Image 1 (cartoon, rainbow, N blue to C red):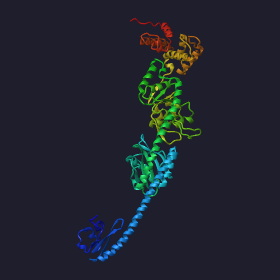
Image 2: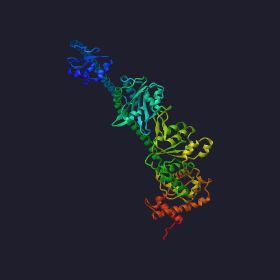
Image 3: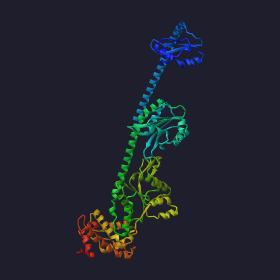
Length: 606
């Protein structure tokens, strides 16, 4: 400071008089400027009041020796008056600045209090955001407000809420990539980011171009952070060109720190509500499932045709590939689907089933994908669909050939992309579901007829499994009959120890067009009619009905003999007990002894 004339006077508080500028060497830069202006001499007087030093007041002349002692005295009096005026001006400006600072701090505190009150009184996220946007607009002028929440799975922002009367180019719940977006800049660096029109134009981002198309000229985005966890951003924009200041950014960051806790709570409540709804739906569903009493052990039979199917099940089950089970009605397609689920890595999750033919066409989409409240007449509450219910589990679509043609593209999309929207919602949901489909119809013929999409057929037919009808595996009928007899006898508290040979022959010769389901119903009816230890089969019901080929019937006794021998060898000829041959065959011990005697089975001494 002492290197300048004013600085020297400020320090010494004595006048400085330079009679000849050309002879002055202490202040080369000052003297150069004065010479260029034609000055030959100058003086500097201390600008000081009784309270403080303000600086120096300089005078210059085109004449040498222009400032005498008397001139200096007069100029000093003038300088003292100027000092008082300058001091008053500075004091007034300082007072105004202090008042502005106090007003800004008061407005900031009032805003934060209003935001806090809004957080307390508004539990619904959309109403909360509207209240906050209204409060903020009174302190920081802006036209556009948005709340973006980070979606980790998509690495994108979900536009939770927007307050802007624009063209609608930016919509609520649209997804905005983090990279390149204005909000992404603030989110990535973890501090406020301000943008002018040129800054927005320089961003390679669809949302930036949409903002410009909406007329936004300047923006400010701040991150929403709770305990070093970034949840999203709060952004404001102006249609006018006035940029946002550091004070605006600081104020917005203060509001964002409060909003972040509300967003964190909303995310937690949302997750809890979703889990609660899903658990409630799973509880109801599993209670219904428990009543069906089906499991993989119900797959009864030793025929080569059935063994071939079970080998296919063991092959495909560990994968996540889609399986298409084909076969006539009653062949046990659901049992095979359950077997695939039970042998897969998804066995700890839910196995969800849906019979597509049993649901009215108008309600099938809601059953599959769910709906929001008010999505259609009668939708008085939100509903979770089967795809959501089966997330990370298996969904069994029975009678998939009955899905309407207009619904098939949406099913194809969820099979390919694992995502969908509920009815009445624009929010995309992602799931991890393995689909097992079943049909008793010829889908290839339906594709040719134009009633089933060929791309959906190919997507379902990744691994086809065809179940043989019961008439093609008659050797499985005796073990199935014995299994169903014991099942219904236990349920009805009956003791049935013997199945007459002529009854078993009649049941084995029948072609069973309804397959295993028809056989099960017939055995249940026989158990109901039985009052003693011997099964009473109404033989008249099987007269004059289709029969299986005689060659197949001739092998039934041999097949039964082979099954009994295998069980005897595996149990070392132990008949009774929980691990004995009778339990393995699903027979009473006395019944097994009777069959051994009738078939002439003897223990080899070799």
